[in-house]
Image (cartoon, rainbow, N blue to C red; front, side):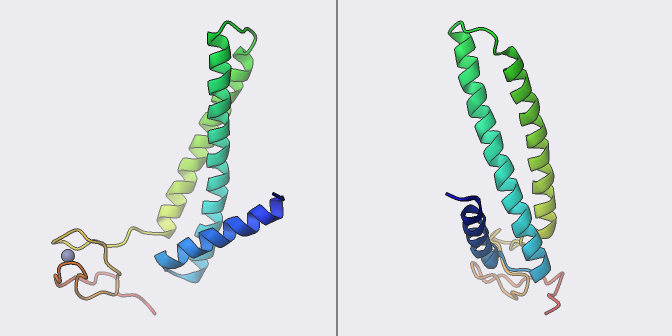
Length: 130
Ligand SMILES: [Zn+2]
């Protein structure tokens, strides 16, 4: 698959997911970008860990000379994980968790007056601007 094709498809599926979350358009674009960047990092972490697994297994079987590669992979993976954590934090800031019903803990839309699940009357702390 070409890089551009992957970019387009990734953006498309993220966009569809984001639509259900809702929110301001600017934040939506930003969080879609962040999620895309983060998914690339997570993929790298995954690849690193699988490469590490192979090297450790080779070592276990008695192969020599993989120490440097293992060390390098451990270091990069640690940095990548820190990056992923930063992205997660930024994405959470852009997509605050939806409020939950105090009675039944079901999530509700900020604009809802009553809980869809149990009918509890809901507080509207942050009435939407639109
Ligand atoms: Zn409820």
